Image (cartoon, rainbow, N blue to C red; front, side, top):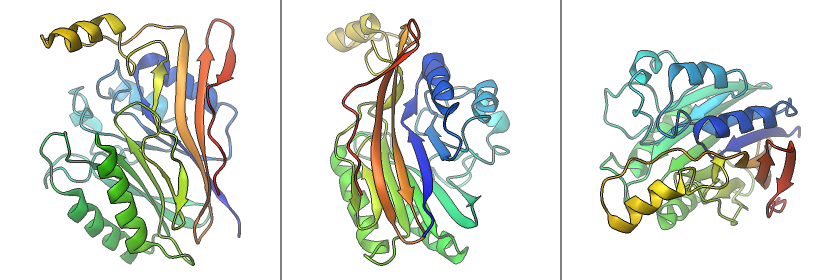
Length: 280
């Protein structure tokens, strides 16, 4: 069967992250591109200007608890067809939690959800996501990809196994991709689980010399004193690019590979940093 290709990028953080991903994608013409953008505008939220700019390179945007940090999001989120915010916000929240796309004759869907462990109070993803999967099945969606924006690795692993065991078999997998976001630290546990490409956290795209994208000095003051301190986006010439490449056909995911690069704007080089293994 013909394989399709997905590129997913972990939390894009600030201008450096935006520019690094856009540059990376200049040579990637045959992939459907998904990226988490809840930190894309100076580390917090997504402005309409940045949304429109990134839309030229990225097919679908996922988000998280910081999507509301730039207030102009309320002006465009209801019309942003390729932007999905966490689906388990209460009914009536602006925007939508899933989106359906046509990809080479196949209907695929992207769902975004928030975890509840060490996170703000939110509706149960275990109930809301399952209800949405059942609805998408009725729309003849053949492949579903989920960005689970969560803090606890145990919650991500448990939720992924539950969905893979519930909706996937060796002969046919409905959930073909499940990746975690939010911690900005890429894990090395990429695998194919019951026909589903999985990684606990895809990492982030932003300043490599930083504390998950933020300046060390302000992070140090806030974390060492517990006193209020505004995080500042880190300034650096080198950008870290984290994500995954997934191949899938109509029946299952066949391959997952971590993307883990540092791009130095001073010498225009791409340096792999522990690049992931091919899994399939």
